[in-house]
Figure 1 (cartoon, helix red, strand yellow):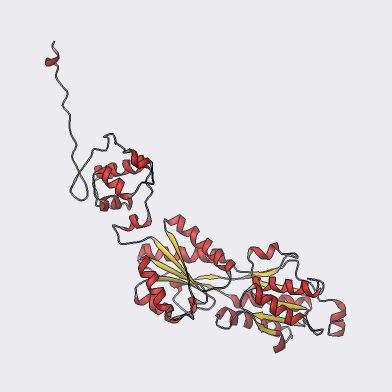
Figure 2 (figure 1 turned 90 degrees about the vertical axis):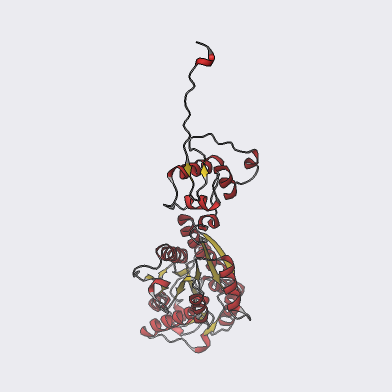
Length: 386
């Protein structure tokens, strides 16, 4: 039989319409991958060009939209796998008007607190395919609200998380509601609906400190508070003083001093409290940073912890267990609070705020370590320092 007599097999060409009506290549067709895709990170434009569909169709496939033909979906998936394309949040949100971005807005001098809460938020974001944009600001600065509004709208955020003291700012929360931005607030008092906050009961944790010091036998007790503009400052103060009062211990006004939740103010207030001969035998610093400052003040004055002075902090940051002696402190699960806030916020974004969510409440607990001790017997017997 001559070559010309050989019957050539018929080739069936599958026609697959893409989501935008264009003709897509058959899913089993070999992909011709241009060399330039290997020289840089592939983009959604590259996927669209190689699959011969629009960017919107690629985005629909990535977001598992039902409005794409199976054949087109197979082509796009094959291209994505072949060139190693990793969708950006912006590409994922193109078809559904979402950015997959959360914002963390803060004005907080405690760097360790911000690092811990950010770590929890990132854990939830990575699991759910979201990204985090961080925005430090100054609450007292002129144009503060306008700055936050610009940040939220420019980034097209799906939601934001607020930490103290911004979480306590009623005007800021009203702004977020006005521009339609979902939010979660980390709070020490319930100022919002349960779906919009993670509540940490600081008063309870501080009360445990007061009870702990009274049971050790301390009657000469001092308190370094946080800034007065923080609600947590008042919650910790009232919880601590209330528990001491229940045990018959009164703290004189001169031994209640204000700090700024910073190491420097802890050292400064520690020096003021410990320099006089008539000094306390125990100090409750309202966070671990200030407690570390008290340690330095005690060192400079030759005061031994815990033999001459008991020190207790609040937060239980990694710093607390690394100090020498290890710091007794109230464990506030800041990392978990960030994760819980982000989980709740992402759930609200995905579900459209449907249903009634249960309130999220975190209860701080005292962790007793080496910085706690009963006062020296000579102090107990004489009522002063000898």
